[in-house]
Image (tube, rainbow, N blue to C red; front, side):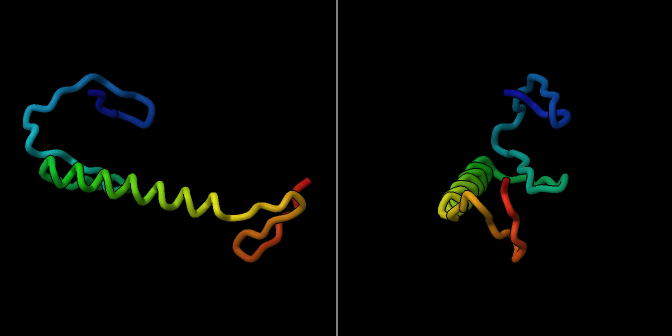
Length: 76
């Protein structure tokens, strides 16, 4: 398994206690969870990202202009 030290640096690692994991919930915050809770959390996050991706794919794009947050942007 690879353990992140920074955004671009990973080192090899192993789990001493496979019953508990740390879940990165964002902005540098981690929560200790059981393995099942961690797996469930990851599955829910994956489903959320997939759902948001699908919603973004439904947004029609115009070749001449588009609107973002009420502001019109003219494409070249």
